[in-house]
Length: 624
Image (cartoon, rainbow, N blue to C red; front, side, top):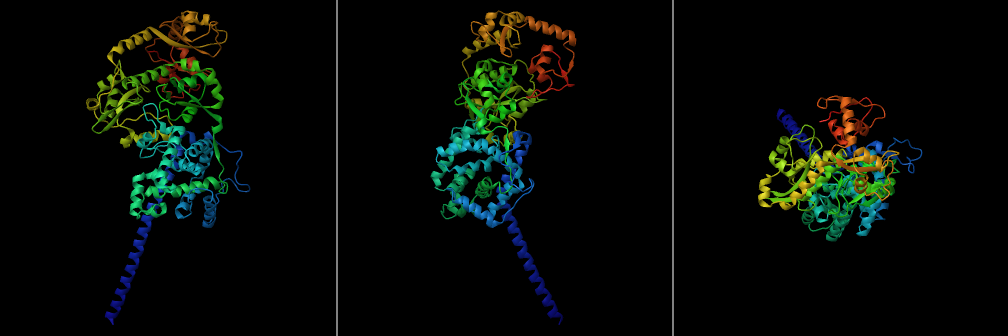
């Protein structure tokens, strides 16, 4: 009897153990499958989340569309959801209108939830941005005979953020890697990043997609190859027995690529059925038909445009993200375009010569920097050298608060003497905002560069070129010396520097009632020199608000009077003096009062690019 009871209990225990083991194995397998299937969702979610930190994606840059309100009869916060049969029917209707084989499954449903429920606020902004970018996308896709629905790919790739950066180093609306971008003519240099240029990158993406379709004859396989590379797709096809069908090779693709096409289908769906999901488009400040492009033939900086015709810096940076340092090189670079809000285009065209002629201290510094880079590069767009470890690139480093030549040298693993030689420095001190030439490996070769650049782009900044671990410059130069201009040219450059030190170029903003003669008396120079320097006609007519370049001896009558006035008001120039900002004062008026330049005053007080001041603020006005 006891033996029978024992046998029964043992049988029951073994049966229960088998059931529990099976359940545990099933849960583990399901959990693993969920992780694999959700990797694509995580990637899309991260892209959408990054927009929260991007300057021009912030709410103040958007406003609700007046033409497309929320669904009638529904409160704005209501989030509709539908059954699988409704989703399937709608996607089937879209499938009949496209060259893509659009299907509905559980993977697509997961991405629809992301765009329509979890991240619907970002979807509203993407709908607004689509009005800027979709006309451009459609024009290029049609030119290369690519289905127009491919415009939705940019949403999956970057959420229409032109300065998006992936963890792998892909950049721009279409997320080009450095090597692929180079294959399609996208330039990456110290000053220009064509992958951020919506026009050039869109043309390159259209060509690339057409080339991939010609290889596979299937648009979904072309999409998979765009995301993971043809090598991964070819391997998946071989493992699937040679079948050229996306869903047949799905299990053999990288985890992120498995979510790529479902995300693309979900974006197709949401861009056509957003009204049914009670999503109201939120439009950005610039719409496509309010922007014009101008071809630039001479060196010009964002500061020149901002300070002469008043285009806000944030607008210039938003519309021209490809110019990394806010500097548009001249004719040595091909096809450089400036995008402006249409209301400023007429002013730019009328005052173009004045804009080019305007030279603040910061503008002069940037022009000298470009000249130095081109000199070291032998006239090319990017300086590079070969080492055993790869290609070395000349880059710019923007000095941050608290940095010294020593700390910068440690970052780049070089000597202070090398930094001094590369940058022709006269002293061993540097100041915040100053830009230095350094040598580094390309961005795709270093994870450090990616993370720093991504952080900068996420904030919507015009990101500086990145410090990265490099090989010793001596080793680089031994293996592939950088082409330098002949020494014979240096005396001429030195003469020009000496001449500039003897004669300072100043800017004078014409006030009402002033004439060339009265201005010439203020600065102690001849009227003819002012007319010649500013290309004035024989009648020497000027107008209020016009900015004139004044070249005269370093101590003009006006500057001496200003210095004298400043000394009386502020005492000894060697002690620290402060000025309390009064209502109505500007940085320019305060700078004039203390015989300082706006750039000096801004630098002393760490005002940054916006140079904003407020009443009651104390400014350091000490003259060195």
